[in-house]
Image 1: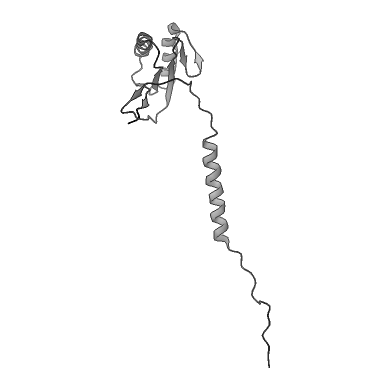
Image 2 (image 1 turned 180 degrees about the horizontal axis):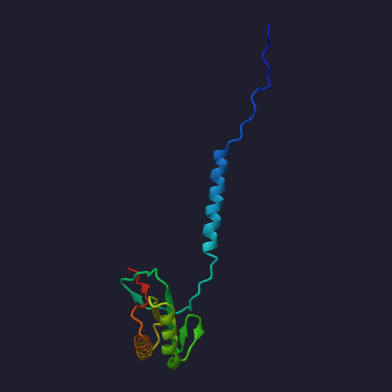
Length: 136
């Protein structure tokens, strides 16, 4: 009479599908966490709110007018009388650039108009005014 052995004769199997799920989960986790670690390359200003805003996906150049009237072109402060020349140089490099005019809520309206006038005199045709989406 043959007695049955209590040992399991089959080899354990390595389940690969749960391991792949965990690897993909870790990959997504690290990708999402690095997005929040990216430093924003804009000057912090308190933008006015608008009921309708849209994001532009083309190459954009930020021109910021601070509350004290200073003009920031990308990350550098630039005098107003040199702004037109700098805009012309950027347009020569790439004529389809979008210039985003970012003015603080507290800046005088005339300062923003002066910068807008410099943009138009330099030949900029694609100008956007930045605003935050108004909470409803």
